[in-house]
Length: 236
Image (cartoon, rainbow, N blue to C red; front, side, top):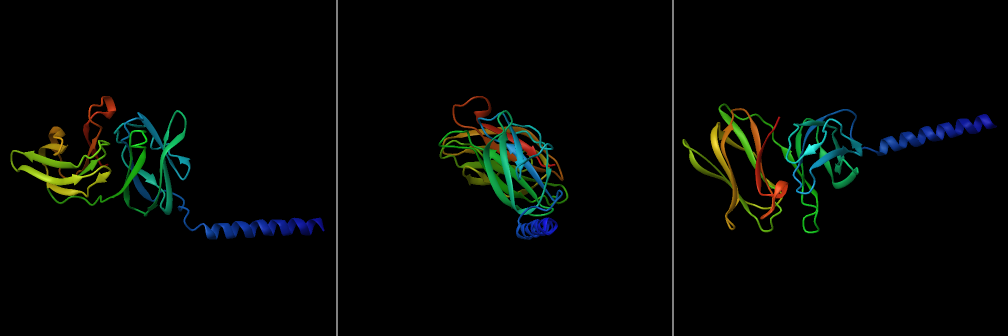
């Protein structure tokens, strides 16, 4: 009798496991399948780490403010949970669940300043990593400034092509699509036409075949990481 009970229990557990597996169709497949770029653009956290599906990603390491560690492997699936956490406490400051497609590229920006008005959150975008044409580069712009009412404009200029307005009316948490431009040396400016607050990065070497994101962060009158800042991230 005891032998029959044990056999029945074993078969029940096997059946339960099989049913559980078949129902969990949204769980990511094993092994890396996509690429993710993780950027700490929060004004109040000097360092962040990343959990994916509640597992710490050692390959990402500590994300200093606007640092760029390059793309990392991310498992694909229809419900992939990404958390930005504070290393000292392991507390989650922002979380998102996204559909991640095999062989595609994505950027995850942690943004905000830890206030009621601007709590931490995640800006998630798919990245078109198609190579630029011959003699071309690709650039895009991200307005991650928490300054209320800012609508950013992005302008580039150089001696050969003059001033080119590439994007405008970029509200908070907007990341533009990539734009193809001729490789060269440019001055890159992002700013708010209404307040005349802007930052320029002079003599930027935009190289043929490369892909860049220009990120504007900060707030008016702040200092340190929270001051207005424009930084370029090279996608690699």
